[in-house]
Length: 245
Image 1 (tube, one colour):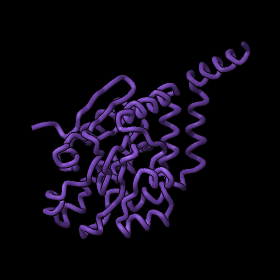
Image 2 (spheres, one colour; image 1 turned 135 degrees about the horizontal axis):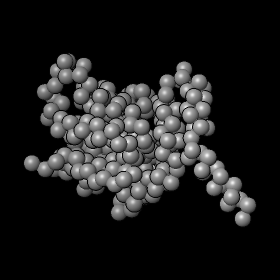
Image 3 (cartoon, helix red, strand yellow; image 1 turned 60 degrees about the vertical axis):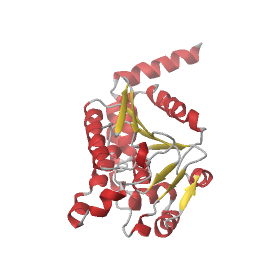
Image 4 (tube, one colour; image 1 turned 180 degrees about the vertical axis):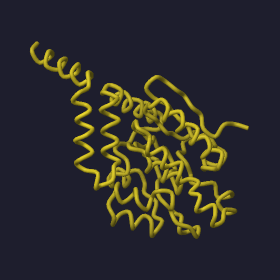
């Protein structure tokens, strides 16, 4: 049976391709298990993660055939929620490269990323209430942070699906690229991240994802560590030497 997640690894990044094209990359238990395995690898060896879908679709949602059979105990286990939380908690940035549909659980996986880019045929939203459930894997708390409470309420309560132009205007994605250029655009973003100090990048993500009451004490401690870093000394010295030329 084909793997639900195709992994390509490099020294500074990993590309994970959601690969269940026969069901538009619907997220099933096997894919969740593969995401946990990937997270374990990235927790041990932090690298930037690029998430992308196969065959012109990011992820059409959770696998409805499996979802229909789940009961209260399954809901409390947070099958998708725990996986997406783990992705969000990765110490290096996560880039979601979204082509085509990102619906339901697929949208929530995208919301768990730090950076999102898309294509002109992107469609993203949360139609869960039409299926008799709620968006319980992150949309109700991550989407308000991304688009604001009023817009998040509209999307979640109506089940409205945003097209690419709306997603860009609302800040769900930061840029749009043609489908055959999407992965290259994600790699270009990863290249810019790789050019920076990895520890400073990790500390920046830690500050961005911290609870509101952690600020500003957290930033001061993170900065204190960086102020003692040899890499800070090296990079600032190189900057000053370039300026003298």
